[in-house]
Length: 125
Image 1: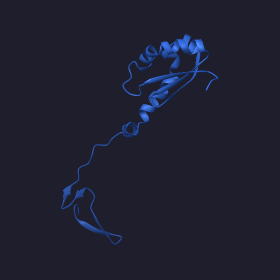
Image 2 (image 1 turned 180 degrees about the vertical axis):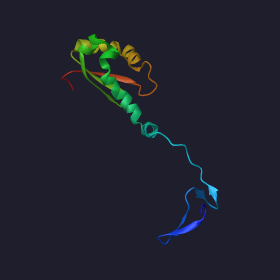
Image 3 (image 1 turned 90 degrees about the horizontal axis):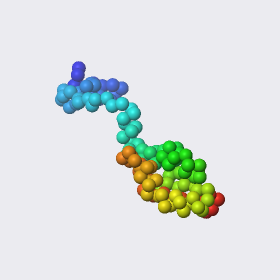
Image 4 (image 1 turned 90 degrees about the vertical axis):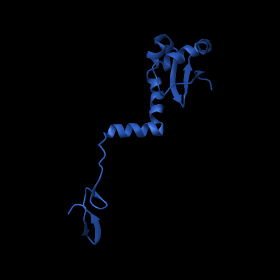
């Protein structure tokens, strides 16, 4: 009965496994759900946003404990990283270190790179 039409509930249906006049269908190889989700996240830009957000979680390891002690509330928005600094003196110092910090943050990253760091004095808007 393969390739033949039959009536099911008043509707004509082809037998499974055929297309047109007895031609077998091509079955795609099954894909892992994780791969499909990863591809979707890449197309939607979610992966890059997650990679950038990961910088905040890794801040101490990336910049070292000395700088981490004088900074807080690190967050990414787009490709910009916002970092609160405890004092004006540290704000000036870190602004001079900006390029080195960007190099450390982006080392080994192919996506989710940070393009800009904005240092803000804590308690100031």
